[in-house]
Image (cartoon, rainbow, N blue to C red; front, side, top):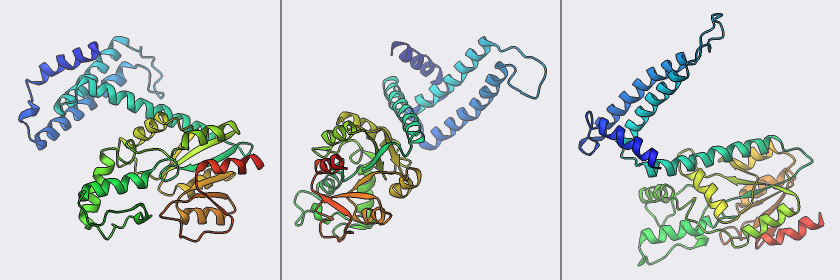
Length: 316
């Protein structure tokens, strides 16, 4: 960290000759950073030249210049430091986010490799994240009640939760979407959520039975950049075992396309449960206050907690 802080400080001293972020408007910052990015493009071209013989259609052998590579990388890094300085990013903050991003890159590579290597000889199951492993509806309802004020005449209940993007009738439409954005932006959907009490024990038991575990999530990770790494950290923090996380708004459709030999799925959404079961797959639907009265197909097994699934797997 000492070396990183030194680089930040050296560049900050020089950058003050051109910009003082504390006195700049947002428009001025954008123009300055745009300038940095355009200038960085020319450094990329210089870095390519330093690589020497990278043009495959040229017969002339050009020597790679190690000193040039270092110098051009330094120039590019200095432009990046300029951008970080403009938005008041500290070395500690940058280091923290570098490690978080590295975790995402490494995990995603592992997931993709795992999914690519699955065969019908593998016992594979898919576990829905929110509502099955994580108490997502509970913390969303609690968040809404907090935002509405503790004196609300009719607090929302878990039974009021709906599998829809339509606002609840008790909440004005504008406020609903405003609070949903805050809920996600601040990590209440992905990091500050309690796990199901038996989630860790359940995943350990099915791993012991030889299952590959794919966690399914429809969380909007592309819109909220922190969401994927928050989810990874959450799974690790709560000792929930898994082999891959599958991200998609149509998670149940895509996982069946990519892993058609799936052994079973665990869901809390009865609509999805019915769709998957109609294709002949085994589905366990965890009973929740918001789905208990909804009719499901006869071949769907309703359960009260995840551990009730284990005897079914031991008998199979």
